[in-house]
Amino acid sequence: MHVVGFCGTSGVGKTTLIEQLIAELKARGLRVSVIKHAHHAFDIDTPGKDSWRHRQAGAFEVLIASGQRLAKMREYEVEGHPTVHQLIAELIDCDWVLVEGYKHADIPKIEVWRAATGEAPLYPDEPYVVAIATDAPAALPVATARPVFDMAAPAALASHLLDTAERFHYRPEIHG
Image 1: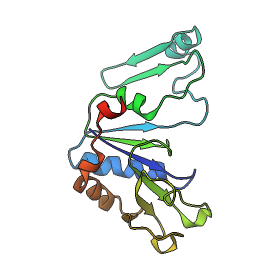
Image 2 (image 1 turned 30 degrees about the vertical axis):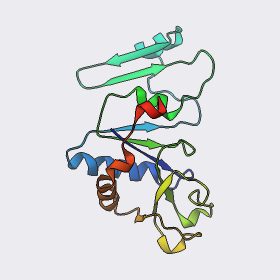
Image 3 (image 1 turned 180 degrees about the vertical axis):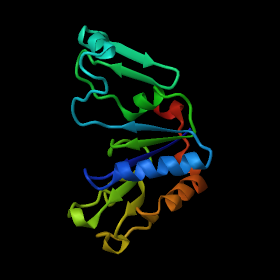
């Protein structure tokens, strides 16, 4: 399994880029999973439906399965923040795991950066950023030897990930 994170400020296009990479990697015959960090409480089930009712009744975990999909929800009895490594351990083996958020996790990451936001990039101070995807390579405020990709060309980034796959090979014995 290979793991790569995507970091950057809100609204820079991380989700869109990941969406495009999923399609690109899947078209190349690979199985891709995603872990996304949420900053607040969220629901994936509808109030009044069975899964919601089970969760509201106090179930620790609710697993919903059909012939087409599976979803698992877990309620923390005490507020907790699982590490990216704990979440990766929850996944079925696949070819690639794309992680959105978790900008300070100790996994190799692609920073998604847009000049128009006016936000400082993370890559000068974040050692786990191994490449940058941007809409304005010439506007990067700090020179870098890291590879820089055009956000509008996800095929090039997908090819880079596959060409350098060993760098992204996940070793659970190191993080587990």
